[in-house]
Image (tube, rainbow, N blue to C red; front, top):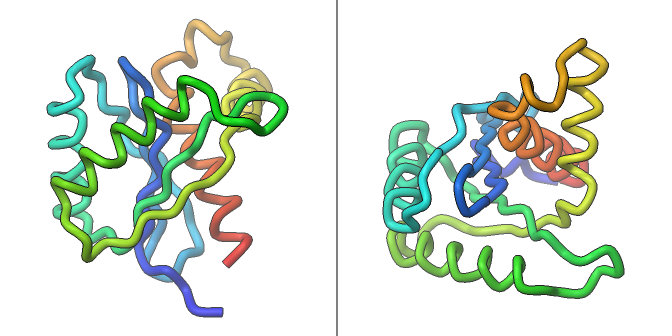
Amino acid sequence: MSKPGKVLAIDYGGKRTGLAICDAMGIVANPLPAVVSTSLEETVNAIADVVTERGVQTILCGMPFLPDGSEGGQVEKVRFFLSALRKRLGEEIPFAEIDERHTTKEAESMWRQAGFSRKKAKEFLDSTAAVVMLREFLELR
């Protein structure tokens, strides 16, 4: 199966949006600094800048489904964000979605195992969750 090139994973949040990117071969997933903003426009513009600067070829976004797998209000917010990002980036870059229900808990567990409390790891959790999503996506490719 072909590799997707550089993939940017996004863990969208109303205040903090975690980001992770992989290398062009789709082997290594690395966290990027989270975008901290309550403005949809600022968040979209910041992510668009990352896409341009890093030569991103695919956008992967986590979908916060409810525990039973259905869509709730948070999924609607993420879809609204994605529509704004698509409008800003154009149609050339493909978008993919992934179930993110367990990623934050996995990210918290990783930081706990490294000896950090949730409070100390808070600023890194969203980007770590994006790394978890990106690793899963790359394993499926």
